[in-house]
Image (cartoon, rainbow, N blue to C red; front, side, top):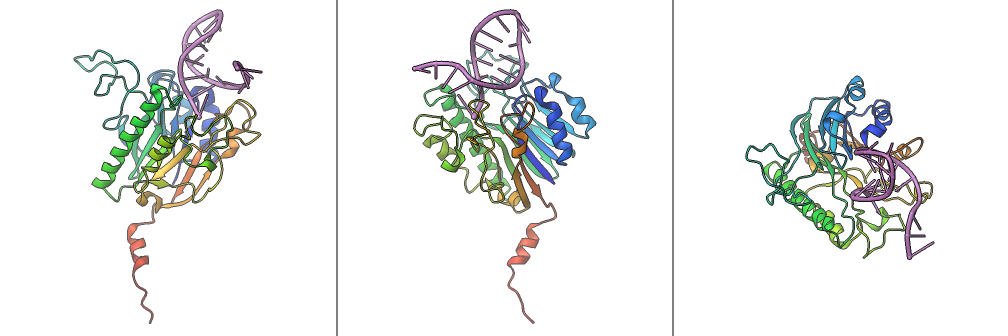
Length: 294
DNA sequence: ATGGCTCGTTCAACGAGA
């Protein structure tokens, strides 16, 4: 089972590349971010011709998340409990026909989608950028992640064996090795600030990086400007953060740097994990049994 | 010191990205 996450920076501008890659790499499930369109604008036909089912959450030209999967998707959700919105409060509609809002009547953005595939609980997440340390978007980013962490803890408390993956564009470079863009300055810039890194670290013990053990180095994003890609001045901000039960089944992983090359690439590249779903807890428990030598 | 690319909006610049 091959599962991937990719911030595609507009699915309509990139549909040929995305579907070509899915087919060539024989990807089972892809979580996308920044599709930048509504479901009625999504280029469904090309995905479906390649054998993929689709789940799409997009409200306008900003943000937007989706899944393409060869296998059936169930339990589709586009929010988690306590997810904050961004912007000005709106008047709630009595019949619930208006935009989805948080507890303060602030509209929710299209930044999360959860699906279940073959018993795996997968989330496609587009964490808010933050814009700058003194911007309201930065406080929103931290609140959004705090709510995600609270839900993650609850999901795993209810089911410690849950095979859960929080995959997407986290918009945080968790270590200095993950930041290679010289325009980002510690203490001044988003993505490397202490509160962001502490928030990322707060997921430890719940989920861990499923990719880094197999791909210890490498960026997932390079800015379009300033020759960042040829100079390899990128950042590692796209992650598949997974529960222990999920990681027990991961047999390989990689970052597909080649997708930053060629005509009209996204500024992010796909991040991929390969799972062996036949690996079970029982087998691992058996491995822990004392050996009896005859 | 500033902008640098790319996208969607929609035809002219601008918001947003990171």
